[in-house]
Amino acid sequence: MLANAVLGITAFVAILSLSGCAKNIQTKEAVRDGVLAHLKTRGDLDLKLMDVDVANVSFRKGEADATVSFRAKGSTDPGGAMTMSYTLEEKDGKWEVKGKRSATGADPHGGGIPSSPSGASPGALPPGHPPAGPAAGAKN
Image (cartoon, rainbow, N blue to C red; front, side):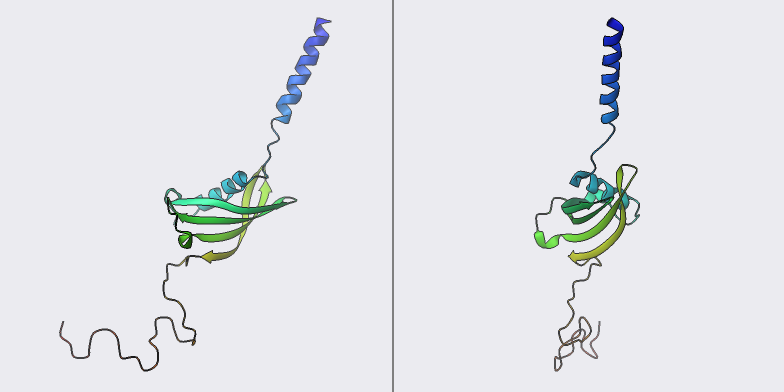
């Protein structure tokens, strides 16, 4: 009788420990971890200077589509955020970035000159505007 009880308890503990290995990765946190792992492979980003938030995520069989927001650490300016959309795939119980779909928000290239509605090159003066910059013949 005691042997049956020990065997039953051992089987119960084994089942509990095996079920604990199945980790639910269909969470924003798991997707964020996958995006951060991807970004750490880039040498041009210092993630300690950024707040990274998963704004939206949708899951399907083996893949996830996520909208991720980036902003300077501690910034509350909504206009200073950049949003990227990623497709991730599940590999070995983790999310890995499969591809990037789009960028919105702040200019990711640091530009600040909007394009002209007339089609002129960025930074061009409107027709008839006097020249800008040092006057001709001025001595420095």
